[in-house]
Length: 392
Image (cartoon, rainbow, N blue to C red; front, side):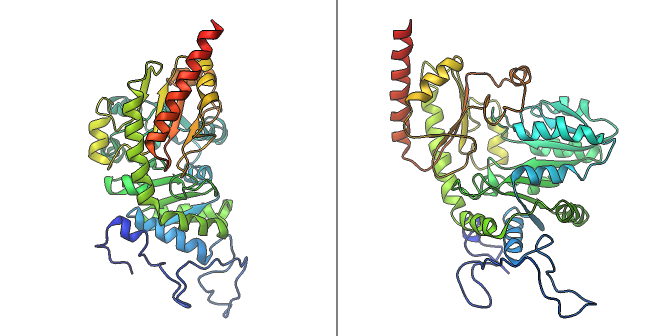
C-alpha cells in the first residue's frame, strides 16, 4: 500500500499502481478482455465480465479514490455518465437542490430527464446559505453543489452546506471538476459524493472523455456500483489508461495553469473592454475568503464579460493562441462561449436570469507562457476595437 505520509504530488506517481506486480512494468497493463475464465463455478474470481469490472479500470478507480481521500472510486464513460448515475440513486417523489449556476449538461439532466421519473428539483443560489436552508423540503434527498461554479465561478461554502444537509438528513453531491483533488478535497469537508468530468484537468490532454465518482460510505458505494453495472456506462480500458497517464502530471499542470489564471485575471481587470472578471483567486471576488479557506488556489478557469455578442465575435476572431472550443482543463488554453457551448441547453431567458450573458467568455488556462497569452489578448482587443470603429 502507498505510504499515506507522502504528499499528494508524490502519490500521483508512487501509488499502488506505480508498477505492475507481475512483470515490473512501470505502466498499468491495459487488459482488453471482455470476459474472464472462472476456475470454480461456486466461487468466481475478482472479475467475470468487462462491464462489471476490469483490472485496468480498477487501477484507475482505486487511484482516484485514494487521491480524493475516499474509499470507493468509479470510472464512467463521461462526466455526465458519472453525474447521471449519482442522480439515479434518487427515487420518484424525491427532491434535489441544485446550484443555479451549474454546468449546462447538469441543468439538462435535472430539468428534462429526472422530471420524467418524478424527481423534483429547485435551483438555488448556493452561495447564500439562508436561501439553501429555506428551500430544503421534507422530501429533499440531495443537495448538489458545483464550486467554483460553471461559468460564473461562484464559490459555495462547502462545510456550511454539508452542515445543513446533515441536519436535514440529505446527501451532498459535489462536482469537483474545476479544482480536482489537487486543489480541493470535498470528502474531507464532509461531502458524500465527489464527481468529476475527468475529460478536463484530471486527464488534461483533450484526448479522452471520462467521468469519475468517489465516495466514503460503503452502502452508498454499493448503490453506485449496482447502478454502474446495471446502466453500463463504464469507461473503456484504453481511456482508463489515458486518464491514469494524465493523472501523473496533474499537480504540476494545474498549479502552473492556476498561476497563469491569476495573472490573466489581474490583467483583464485593467482592460477597458472587459466589463467584469469572474475568478475566485482575486481578492475582489466575493467568494475569495471561502475559496482561500477550502481550496489551495482559485484554480485555472476564469470568465470575463464583454459588451455583447458582437464584441465577443470580433475579439475571438483575432485571437491566435487559445483553442476556441467546448471543454476545458487541457494543456492548451481553451476559450469557450457559454451561451452557445457549455450552456446551450439553457434557454436565453434562463441563462440571463443566472447572469450568463451573451457577452460572457470562459477561459481555461493551459501551459503556455502567460506573457504570450496577454500579448495575444492585447492584439485581439486592439484589432477588434479598430474594426468596431471602422464599422461605425
